[in-house]
Amino acid sequence: MAKKHVVILFGGNSSEHDVSKRSAYNYYQALAATGKYTLSVIAIAQNGYFIDAKRSYEIMCQAEEGPLVEDYLKTIDDSALLSPLAALADLPKIDIFFPVVHGNLGEDGTLQGLFRILQIPYVGAPLRGHALAFDKVLTKEILTQNGIRNTDYLVTYQHDEEPLNWAKVKLALGDVVFVKAANQGSSVGISRVENEAEFEAALADSFQYDHKVLVEAAVKGPRELEVGVIGNDDLLVSEIGAHQVPDQGGDGKGWYDYQSKFVDNSSVSFEIPAALPADVTAEIKEMAVKAYRALNLAGEARMDFLIDENNVPYLGEPNTLPGFTNMSLFKRLWDFSNIHNAELADRLVQYGFAAFEKEQELSYAFESLGEEKVGTFHEGPAQ
Image (cartoon, rainbow, N blue to C red; front, side):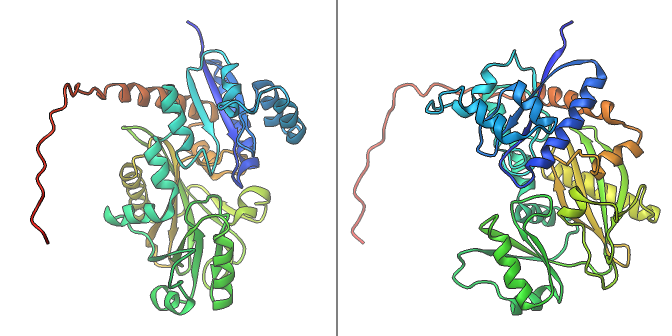
């Protein structure tokens, strides 16, 4: 029986471009270890062009990207309408896509729309699941509607006639808040704020990444928790992991930012499984599953929680394409849950095939309208 051809996509034009390379490398190694698949990789350059498989493999293995991209672009007619996708046409028959593109394109539903048009299975949530979960404001509205505890918040837009000011924020949300670009990931465009000057600076930063900004109440004495969920209908939930950076908790100002996640987490304290009362552990896992279903997710997700000084959990946000670098807690959570890299990657591929097969059961047939028979229009009475 011929091996299925899996195409791993990575890169993209988001701030998480380099993170994606590292995630892709780990998934490539995991899938190769199964011995079940033929593998290709396609890098998406920061200009949006898909790069050929040979150069993409070199990029994934940390070769200097710029010259390889420039070299590839010389080989194609960039005036052609579909030139950004030309590299796909050079691949053998694709059985399934495995997107590892964090942030824009990969995590907002854009690539999933392409996969649907191509009618090729793919790993992970459907377009609508990605799109909903990537927007922090829509996520909170859906969580709230479904009775899933999350922190209080306000929303502001870049061109509001009456801009949100610090006085309104402090009155509604308290002395400490987080300001977040609504559609962004990996703690980019996020600031911790506790005065007017910081608030104005935070808004300016967040508006670099989105025209919509979420302002969220801080949790008192917080601990940050993460839990993995995989599957389509029958879900598996990982052990809960906790992490804490220096000066976090109590009145501390520390928090798990981009630097701690991906550059240097040597000072971060990790705990798996998190030391929590049994009832709190059960509640967090239940909230994670409920949110996964409410947001129409599939395949994989990492659910991020905050827990306050009284052990009350709040769902922060889902990540529909969680990082899989050596520093990523998602990867470690499944290790501690006895589903190691190769098995996890294999499961994700199988979930992708299953979701595609289920989608094929739906009918998109239509009835021919036949000849049009238009009704008679009469002029109404004068107003």
